[in-house]
Image (cartoon, rainbow, N blue to C red; front, side, top):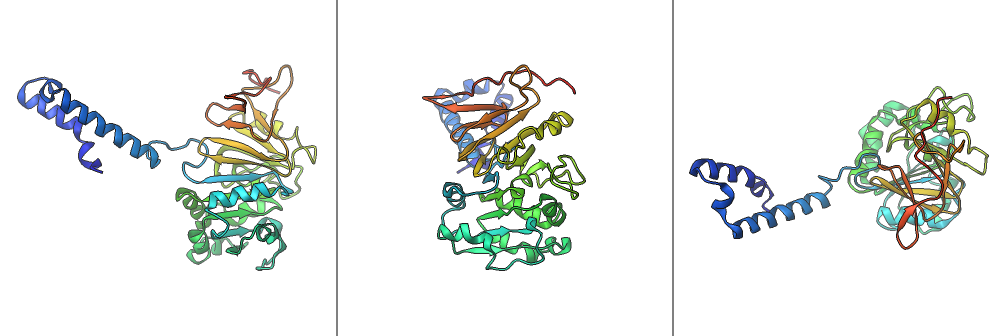
Length: 323
């Protein structure tokens, strides 16, 4: 495409009008204007499809996230992960660091669910040494992968090992080239920008000594095992303290699939949304989304599919009162 040339059309018009003392539009004529408009339209379509003009504000502009609330049993969740990675034979890196063991080998039991679907191109990647995580040798498998999946455990271990290292940079580059990042339980929470339950003293502390996640989903705080562990009220204090954040609580065997500035709910359970500018009056600080629902991250609008997408019932644009 002659993009470099055609992007100078406006400048040409200006020069033409000024040099000849005439209206540049009149100088070209209707036929010429039609061809210029057509070229500019094609350029806009091309640039939009390549992501140049469509940068997402919160989710990945390219690539996808599969964020799982723990206890993943529904094969549809991992199936979706592999579809986004390019198929069951796609090279996948699995990072089990949150589990807390000193070493993980190729026989790690956490690979069982991947192998049950027929996956064979799996690499286990693990370190607790930040210098290692900051090395080209360590991140090479990520650079060759189409997908990365974080296992469960304690999310602060992932932050300690990989935050602000070459590994984190390589993960963002994976998304930029259209790959997928997934994670379950701790591997879900680490994908947010705010690290809920990140305290080394215990997983009941919502705002602890680790508060920064890897930030693949910007402006978010993510919780997991939501209803199964009666955690549905826990994110309220995080959003009250940080009202700019979007709180997302994901139940077990449930996931959100994030592409750009929207996500879809899949799996077998519910997702709770905590938005400081929206509630169910008089005191409902969260509302639930079901599998098949969709969320617009820019408008902060949960939608349910009927013949057309429509807002879910009951949440209203009512700001939370300060505690």
